[in-house]
Length: 91
Image (cartoon, rainbow, N blue to C red; front, side, top):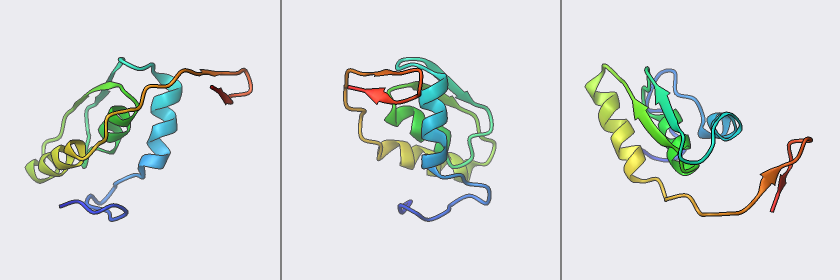
């Protein structure tokens, strides 16, 4: 089981780094491709934000870890909002 806060891949990045990138450069329903997905951080961020995703990974152990992480993602909550020119989210 993948525990929150523990690295399971040598170059694993935090979801808190990738979530804003996915949110800023895509829209809900868009398709995110991560051709070197490792433990699936980008895919998890995409799933959390309501994006579709495709991940490619050569190491089977990391594929299994990414699959487990994705099974544990809570579906995104619907909300109404928009970004202002200053980057703030207005609900």
